[in-house]
Image (tube, rainbow, N blue to C red; front, side, top):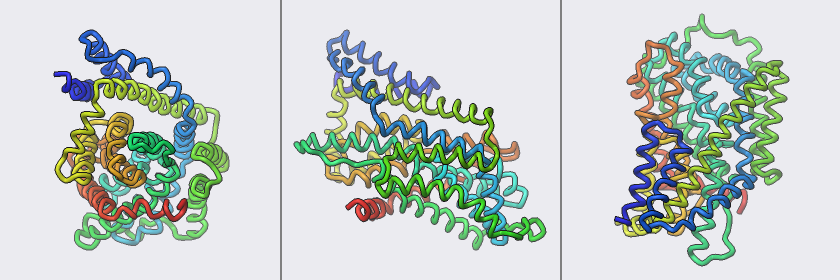
Length: 459
């Protein structure tokens, strides 16, 4: 019975989460309840809980995680600066004459917003409000329109600078060091957030290209589902060069400063995030849309999102301590190492579990609860940490699209007109989920897609 307690702990946490209770308190509460049961029955050593203050203090002292509120601030501020609206208008004017051009515009703008903000909810809601009515009015199939918006909005998960990559980079770094210590390597190598940023560039752009190819295929084989914008409805093409420059240059320049400073080694992710936050403020000032009221809204949203992330991190730390106290990590290690197929079987099972958990749990919960348990074991099998991090990141991105609880679906459902049914949204994202899975298979087959660029830059 004692061997089943780690599984019961994990199952109990999932059930509590599905009942709708707060994530952080569900994780911490479930862990403490099981710890109390174990102490009373003599199956859990209370000394494990003595590490909780040190864990919390370590989170408070982790300078990498300071990048989270800074990137959130940058994203929310850019959202308020009307950058998406201007980008969509400009891209629609450029690609409008083509069948599927409006969908391609949405994908390109989604990519730029992903690199500018990294916040999936803000991107999906903004794109839904701005582009969905236009796409429907111009004859787009509702499934194609909603699927394109949801998928483009989730690009913020994989295209840097991404909050997911920041959080995942910290977890993978700790797991990589732990796996090396477990193998007797007492001067372990490290993997950084910058490594994951570089590793995610090619897969992220590959996904953008795959989305566009899907829309081109729709335009060729089902042209009625993605009609061109009628000539009389297109925006005037006068001064198009000036419009493109004014719409594209500011976000591209800001992203270039943030990413370039990290990849060139001039700044840490935290320092680069502060550059991004200041740059977002200056951009809002240039557009004359920064007021004290907007600044207050941005700071409140940043505080709410950041507090949620860090409280979940504290709750997950308590949960993982209790899980390890019951020998859960040993149980998982034995299970994964005994699987048929060796390393391939272990990776396949972990990816499948993360994919299925994405139907019900948020990416933050999976990052802080599941990844710290399985990553050290997988890395001990000799896997590349950057490759594993990118595989998990794309899998987590897919979780935003998977019915019934994909968060991108809920975000869009909240702003979509009543004429759009939930089933139409579900139907629309299925091709993009398949594209995501094909991307996972491609990266599994050719790991260099994720590892070549970091190796080229950092050696």
